[in-house]
Image 1 (tube, rainbow, N blue to C red):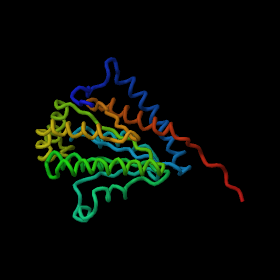
Image 2: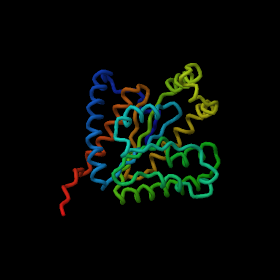
Image 3: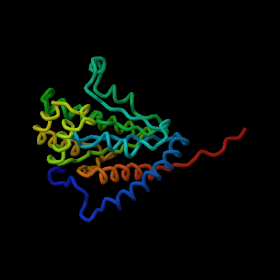
Image 4: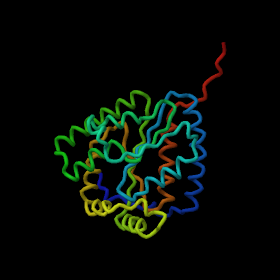
Length: 247
C-alpha cells in the first residue's frame, strides 16, 4: 500500500529549475498541437482530475498548464460543497454533468473523490457508505473509459512545512486574501487523517485509471509533471485531423 509520508514532496535530486522550465515549455507547445487534433477529431475526451490538500497549488497548476489552450475545447470545473439541489441527488449526479464531451479536455479542481475524503474524515458517513462510494466511483470511471474518455488523475503532494507557509501567505499577502479561510487550518490539523483517506483511495482505485502522485513543494516541478502526464495520455491516443469530406 502506498504511504504518502514515504514519498517526497520535492523534485528529484539534481533537477534544475531552468532545465525543467525549458522542458515544460516544450510540453506545453506539444499539448497545444495535440489538443487541436483532439478537438477536430472529436472521438476522444480527456478528463484531468486534480486533488490535493489545501494550498497544494491546484489553481496555479491549472493556470500554468492549460491557460494557453483553445478555450473552445477546454473546460474547468471547481467542485465546492454540494448545493441544496445537488444533495437531493446521488453524489455523482453533479459530476457526470461536467464530464467533457468528445473532443474536449476537462479539468476538475477537486472532484467526485471529495465525497470519499471529507465526509469520511469528518465522520459524516460510515465506512460502509465510503466503501460503497468507492465501488460506484470505479464503475463510473469504467463507464467513462468505455465511452472514450481518458482520465488523468493527479494528487498534488505538498509537505506540511510548505503548506503552512502558503496558508500564512494567504493571510499576509493582499493579493491572496481572497483565498484565505479559517477552515483551512482545521483541515491542516487533520493532515494525518486526510493522508490515510487518500491512501485508501489509491488502494481501491480502478486499475483502468491509476493515480499520479506529483511532488508539489516547487511550483516549477509540479507544473512540469502535470504537463508531462497530460501529454503522455494524449500521445497514447490515435489522434489525427479528419480527412477532407467530399460530396
